[in-house]
Image 1: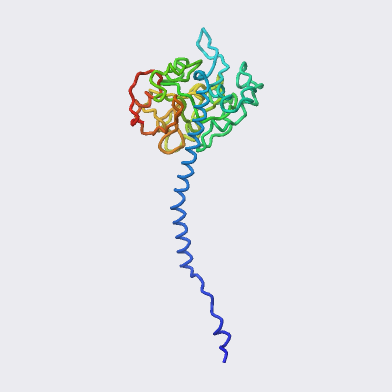
Image 2: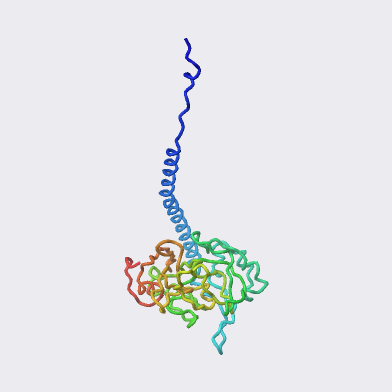
Length: 314
């Protein structure tokens, strides 16, 4: 005798609302646990790519007989002012980073803002950009009143190390390996190339930078990203545009170490947690922690200060 139809058809089990909410909550917890790990892995990869960019820059410099000028400029004998054109160390090494066509397209007899140099100043070069940052392809160079954009230049996250002090006070007398019309030879680095910084990071949240040139008449201001409702501890003073290609270990408002809250627009910093990547004069790349002592950082930024620095200090 067959069972009634209702007895043979069992009802399919289903989730209750409570069970569904529990499953969703568990999934949410798992995502919350995994997301930081994913982000950390992505940042680690970006930091490695950033270091590789600096290594390429280091190889390019070492393929030359000496360090290129921080930027090249005719200097007024009466006032000492820069007359231009101001082409920077990044332009000088284009041929060594497989950008020969771009180098040949630059008319170095003219200023960067000249219409004849529109094409080269509009080119984005990935070697000069940190993957962890969101620097725009072009960055503005403003006038002294921060009212007019004089020109736009290709962005960079890497600036040459000027040394100690304010660049504006002595642009042609840097204590590092890059300054106005410099031509530092490797034998001039008496502190040792393995203990002298050559190039360091600067993130968009501090101020803009470029690899191309120092534009005459231009000024560098802090970016809007570092102005917040909780107060602004960054330097409110503008710096002339040589700080767009150079960075310094300042002596005013110390400490001026990488990523420090009291940095000025001409300082160093990155979007990497804990510090910033730096290229040393020997071609090696190391991560300088933001906890480094001011004195140690300043010593690393000079080429012949005769300081004795232990490797465990940075």
